[in-house]
Image (cartoon, rainbow, N blue to C red):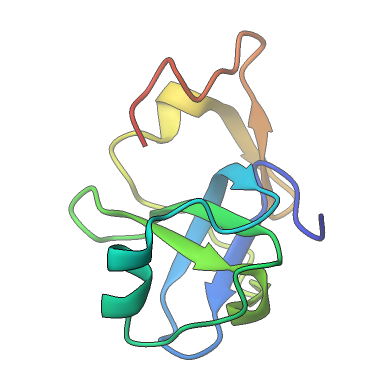
Length: 106
């Protein structure tokens, strides 16, 4: 795994920013979803669930090869940030003590 929970990243192709809230060690999405995706990155790599910045509450599922570290140092604006994280410091989010992806739907 390259990125940790709470890491702020940028999508290399589309430029949107987000924060990682969950990770799968390979793509867990079904074939139908995968085949309708604009791109089909290798499924045999980590895939991350992101809360997308300034999106009105959207989340997305992204392959590690499509992500890079976010250099802005800016927080993510998303209504579910408080469900997963306590604070934003030094370019990343701190996990809540009782962090669980089941506590908030992704």
